Amino acid sequence: MKPVRLAAALVAASVLLGATAVVAQTDPKKTERTWKAKCASCHGATGKADTDKGQELKVPDMTTPAFQAKKDDELKKAISDGVEKAKDHAFKSELTPEQIDALVAYIRGLKK
Image (cartoon, rainbow, N blue to C red; front, top):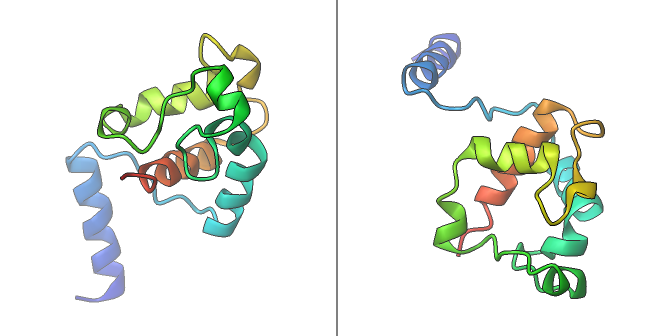
């Protein structure tokens, strides 16, 4: 299949399946830097919330099946608007929608 047709087929499939287009145009290294700068102080480098701040705030372990079962929209909202116990960690004014999508994909990669 030609690359153009393959790309078109993938886009069509994602639309038909209702998938979120996390074909983020974001460099994985940039996403990792964003994670380290914005998220790791509470969520830890591996998403296990094994930091002092994470323990203090009782941040959930993102690697568990229960956490990974959350919908992408729920994760995007938490990144954009913050969560109840950490409203000061809302990033909608600091991150683009593409960066937030990339962080959701990064979080999905933290599975156990």
